[in-house]
Length: 180
Ligand SMILES: CC(C)(COP(=O)(O)OP(=O)(O)OC[C@H]1O[C@@H](n2cnc3c(N)ncnc32)[C@H](O)[C@@H]1OP(=O)(O)O)[C@@H](O)C(=O)NCCC(=O)NCCS
Image (cartoon, rainbow, N blue to C red):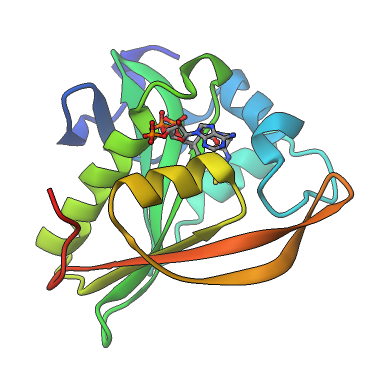
């Protein structure tokens, strides 16, 4: 896709920009991520192949308690990141991320996007607590290196390629941010 169709960035880091995720980001590349076993390895298993219509329906159907962003680097859509389950009464939310383009894994873009979204959650949304949980070792390494609090382990809670693996649970508080 070209940058012409993208909404302007809401948040801009040194390399990663976050744009409100809309159907403008629908593309064959994005659809390929949604059906790529490598991308899906640590996500809930899909019972069927995702179609273009599924992708557009999901993009159009934004729950009132979610803020979804597309991640771009130099104008290229590389993945999505979101705050979901935003509970205004408690000022809490859950963070989720997907980096679809394999050639951009391991370059620090995920870490940068998480830092941007956490600042947005605390400063713009007034959140007090952001949590996240994942069986993905790369994701858990990012949480550890960003200084999120490790709140526990759901032992053998996730089936990954025939093996039962742990889900690690993390959180960060606005009043107790990670050390810089
Ligand atoms: C999780 C993910 C989004 C992270 O984004 P990223 O930009 O690739 O990650 P970063 O480069 O910011 O950081 C990766 C960190 O994980 C570490 N890491 C990478 N692969 C790892 C692995 N298999 N086991 C342990 N640590 C790993 C890196 O050393 C790095 O740690 P550091 O900051 O201490 O050096 C992405 O790599 C990924 O796993 N993609 C798979 C598809 C996907 O998006 N799945 C859903 C995500 S839960």
